[in-house]
Image (cartoon, rainbow, N blue to C red; front, side, top):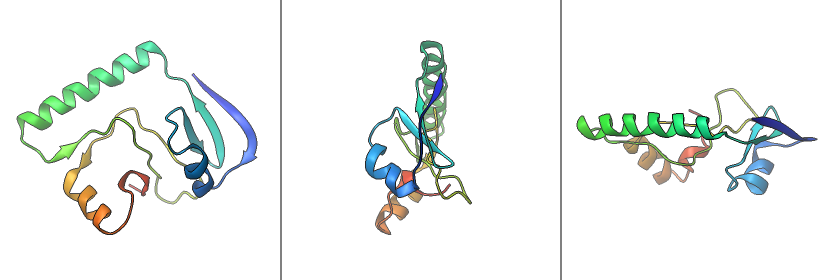
Length: 108
């Protein structure tokens, strides 16, 4: 279930400061959204992540599936999404971190 929490418009940076560590919230076009995943939703995303991870291990890929991650879609100014499941390249994460960027907070 998704609910709107405020009519106040937030910037991406304000959202990160105030809600970046709280996995319950997303920012969509400057609007704070309270994301309340249901049991079946959590179960499905957990099973999907498990199957993807099993394939990553089987194929010996250098990819990771973070439990919590914020992404900023391209061409957006005030959107921060928390994907249910995301697969990230470990080398790309290391490269972004070496450049002083927080990997999961960058545009995909």
